Image 1 (tube, rainbow, N blue to C red):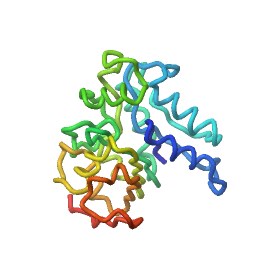
Image 2 (image 1 turned 180 degrees about the vertical axis):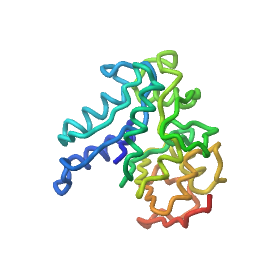
Image 3 (image 1 turned 45 degrees about the horizontal axis):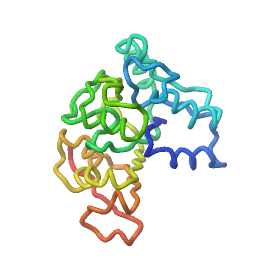
Length: 223
């Protein structure tokens, strides 16, 4: 499995870790993205997040974290080799306020087949991290990150995309109803044949549909 992080995933992970029918001893977990140069004990570290919100709660023994406070390029290569040894059954992802998928900010690279990339974070993405309370100021947010590539995410057999909150409504609308474009990285999810997107009323508020019903079915868009 591939695990996502961020404020939008807290409730989901809380429910997931309390599920009684998951045999965590056979689960192998991979990390979606991490800031370059950030220590694991920093409040904004996604390794810290996963250790606290998922790994220690479930007892997962096989996990691969992106220790990007050392040589980030080397880490991306090492974890990437492990990631591609076998198929990924399920990827848990979210959508950023700027439409990013993992840390693939617009314009995202839709073509590379490398498992992980070193990416430059745009200002909108970095401001989101401040707004969620992980960093005290924009200047404190790292400018680079290690991110799983878009194509690698799409290799997963199933994708579960959890996107709550009104601040994600514009990105959800662009991803679901807008042009399939690197300028809206999460729009690429429409090309995957087994993706389920979970929204709340706030994040779905701008969609051109009747949200009184529980299910929205999207036909995959050819890539």
